[in-house]
Amino acid sequence: MGTLTDQVRHLCTEIVALRDSRHELMVELDRDCERMQDMVAGMRKGFQTAHRDMAKRTGKERAKFVSQMKSNVAGMLKGFDKAHAAMAAATGKARADFVANVKDDVAETLDDFHGARTAMAKATKRQRAAFVKDLERTVSTLRKECSSDLAGARKAWMTLFAAGPKAGMEPRRKAAEEAERKAKMEAERKAAAEPEKKAPPKAEPTKSVQPSAKK
Image 1 (cartoon, one colour):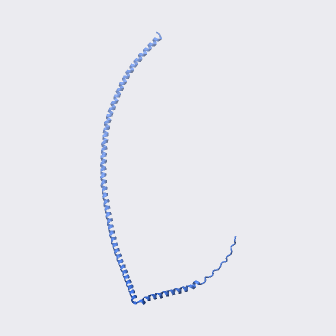
Image 2 (cartoon, one colour):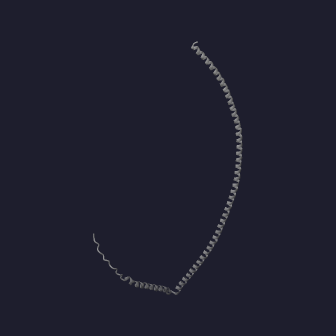
Image 3 (cartoon, rainbow, N blue to C red):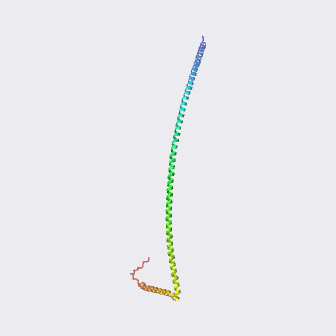
């Protein structure tokens, strides 16, 4: 036989072999696909089971956490209420004590003010009374002196007119004599002081003045 026949026969043999190997490959792929499907189904079931278990577990944990949180919050609220009540009682008592102290201080201050005002009123009343008495005494004394002075002037005036014109000349004469006497004494004093003024002053040594040289 020729070479071409051998080659065609060899080619047909290879084609058949390739067809058998492809069939075996397809069968293997089917088996692998089935195994993969079984594995995926098992994984999905495992995932679903784990998810259900985790959901149950986390649900219980969340419920427990929420319950604990509620208990903690309730305890904190009770503690806040107790602390608020205690603080309100303490601050209320402190405010009441402060107001009472302020009232006492204000009452004491008002009593001090009233006492000081009363004492000052009494003192100023005594001072005014003493001032009025002193003023009355001074005015009475002035009135007495003025009355006595007026009585003396009236008496002198009546005496002047009762004695006549000569009695009026006597005081003027005495006044003129007194003025003349004072003028005479003043003239004698000036005459005694005049020689002292006219005495020549002591001679002072004269200084020789040399003419200055003209430039």
